[in-house]
Image (cartoon, rainbow over all chains, first blue to last red; front, side, top):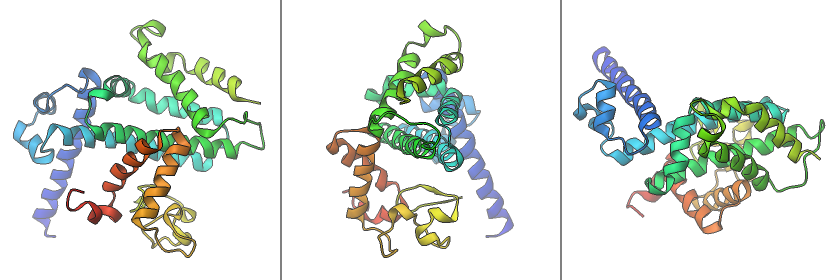
Length: 196
Length: 84
């Protein structure tokens, strides 16, 4: 690759990154009905430039959700290699979701009206999270015992708790991050429930 | 960071690579006992079981999702070339 085409490629990658990051922010603030036109305006790019990188709205949506899923998956993967305390793992899970709180709430609220690829991304990320959750439980076996409940139920109960608070965030933490405001209560209560 | 071509898992430590061989493009979860990479059918089955075990989803939903996930991975692109 010569110098000029190498530079072009770098610019192309940077523009794609910029569009994806803008889309994440727009979907978090306005929900998934936001058009690619709005994303182009926010990114200060021509609509045509956005289309070069993401030919359809579905493509943009899918790649944005993949970005979120990949970041969450990679961080939990890294953590589950070393972490032997489920409590720390749960705090990290909450912290990552807090970073994407508006986006995540919009995903679970609007899922039924989103393209099937959105459901696939969510299923992928939840399975990855649950798998690492199981690894950390195995790692902490020497320190404390967890009730003999199948992995999917242990994970689903945790997610049900988080989703209930997210869906009713205005009741639990009006105008604030519900996950951040209630993190200690959520983690401590869940630990009490599952410890043997 | 290298990601497994067959399931997408990040491979950050040697032990995560098939046979502990960092020149391999697939992970230990996507390997057969003899060290070779699982076939598409084997991977579809193991991915479906993985989804059921980790989330308890209905088996048909899990299989449909597993297929959609495999579609995005480099190892299986050719299985979906004709929109199947």
